[in-house]
Image (cartoon, rainbow, N blue to C red; front, side, top):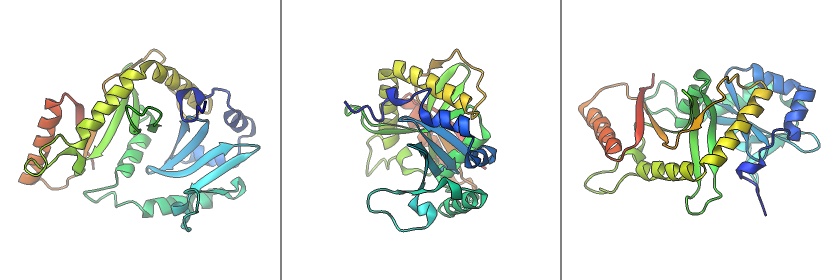
Length: 273
């Protein structure tokens, strides 16, 4: 049976984590020291490093460390089989990190624009808030629930919560009442998340206890909370990026709030810059 991508594949004593602690590679130290980067532990025991929501590098271990970079962040042609290109850890120095960060930033809209990239908002939120202990959680092993990717995992006030992030202008937050009166995509999405969390509550608790232990062991987090529970109700966080207040925008916000409340969605609006 292929267990790849399941909760059970995350191992506390996987070779990649032990080798990082043993060897303390220079490129790893550079990543830890760079406060603009954040590092996530993944099922199947590999590591993702992010900058502004973009994947700066994947780190794997098989008879040595393997660093993989998305082709678009290396400014090269797309490979035939995969989107990621392996590079030698020996060339992963400050200059290479700066180059990739620049390439990631050039693909994102300006932070001052009214419609910044959701990834950028997500990345900046993680850097600014240590309560977000994981991001981009994926699960696609349940055909009944479907494939999902949850933006943020928050550990706060004794609860571990799954958080979906949307920008205020996202079309999935509201349908046109005349042309498409059905519930917008966000309602279906949040219901799917709730079904997933309820079904896999016990597995998620075990998985995140292991993930937190790995992160603490690698010096990625300093979490003191040990007695926490899974919040079975997913949260929706909406970043209000509007710079100007207009009647149309005010009506849109109120309509979204009404829709979410009617569907018993746990939501919060935050003013974004």
